Length: 233
Image (cartoon, rainbow, N blue to C red):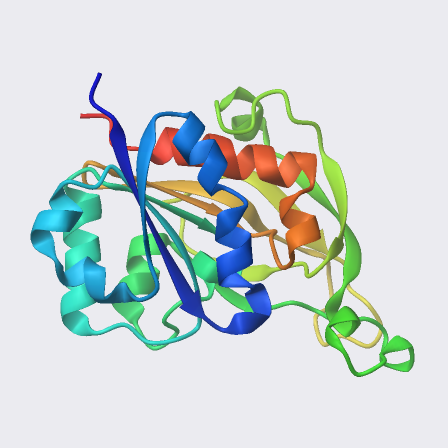
């Protein structure tokens, strides 16, 4: 049996622990029949031969920049059938200056609302809020999220801007708080898929820290997303 080939590309802002976070999933990929290559930069995206032979790209790069030829290589690979997936800022807050990357992924981190000002301590927990990940009607029938019940998290709650080409499998709702400028609750995607050419894209927005990635609901969605996104032909 021919083994599938996964490419893990990591880097960017160290606050999301790209090395430690991706290492959590390498055993899963290997046990599911993938040969795994790990790269510490996006240079590999410009290697057309390597990308053509890749069945799945797992990206964990927050912010940073991508060269035009690298993005062109990634986009061409996805259009030709290479799967593309990731979590949190490693896919939904990558390459902020690139509108073409945003077009590929279908959603972009806008903010993670914080606690009431009087409760803030000046560290990353200022942006940790208890919230619910709600599986949508579509998500209850999708193989990535089927059988997963709504679950609670206390971590960064991503607010994303998106288009309607995505298939939303889970959402989260931001309440309207007195100290915030919005005037009604806002529901945004928390997990989505996107068909792009012959390729499949899966974005999971929870995943700020290792403990969140170890949450059974989050981890199951990410791992199933890897399998679903993988090249099908």
